Image (cartoon, rainbow over all chains, first blue to last red):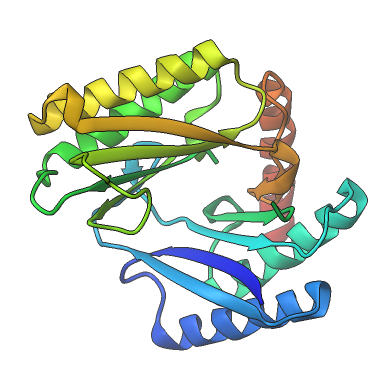
Length: 104
Length: 139
């Protein structure tokens, strides 16, 4: 399984959005890394997330690749992952942090 | 990125301390590294799984861009731990802080791959110009 950690702010993602994000992120992992994503969904309790010192509206999604990626491979994947989250979480670009890690 | 996760034992982190610590963490990170504050994230958890508390009452774990010096990392850890101790009333030995490095090239924020340390100003200028063009096109 591909580990996918998704951090969202409590009350900012509806159950329908969460279902779509889980499915799309898992499918992204399968498409590019060969196995469905194991989603580690983390909700930051309301009033406990800050960005730039202010209450946060950011989401952070981190996926661990199955291999070391060259920049030419990683960058398109980062764009694709970011687009999934912008679309399904209804966030602006500045509210989405996407990370694709090499395996340890 | 950076992402700072603060984990504390139940009841150890008063609600009113959190915005003060978040402000301190943001300021300390930016003062030490020269990074812009826009992308400093600070998330608080109570008895969360990460980072493990062990015998500590509060921990702060920062995932920061690779390329900072050991001295910068030590200063970040020292000052952030002190901030938590100050705002919570916990003893200094009950608080621990540490960071791990994440290559900038692994992270996208605002639709752009993050810059290497020291190249933030040029990156921010280009990033804001791009967003302005996109906003204009959307109107």
